[in-house]
Image (cartoon, rainbow, N blue to C red; front, side):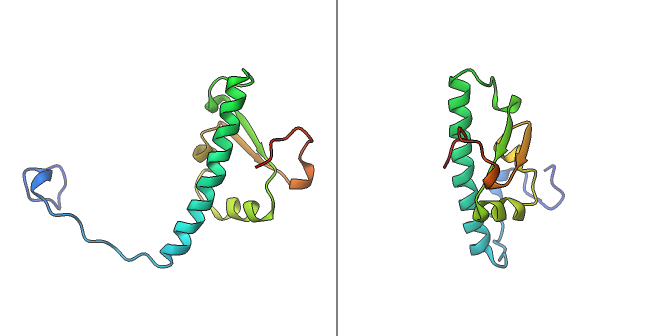
Length: 106
């Protein structure tokens, strides 16, 4: 095996690893469920922009979000590269009050 802690010759012969209790896992799961809902809305907006020939691929997109307080707090609590999670090249987060009239709302 290429893993030093696995003695069996085949992965099919190994046991499943033991689960690890993660502190506050319910809150983490709820946070990422909320993020995935927001991400789905963003991906739909990117698809609309792609269909209207505003952008080519999502990785070419520069995304500006104008989140409400709840979503702003959510985004600021995520330590990962959020632009990468949204699959865009650039992400800007501005205050909700700065949103132009033609901004998509979700």
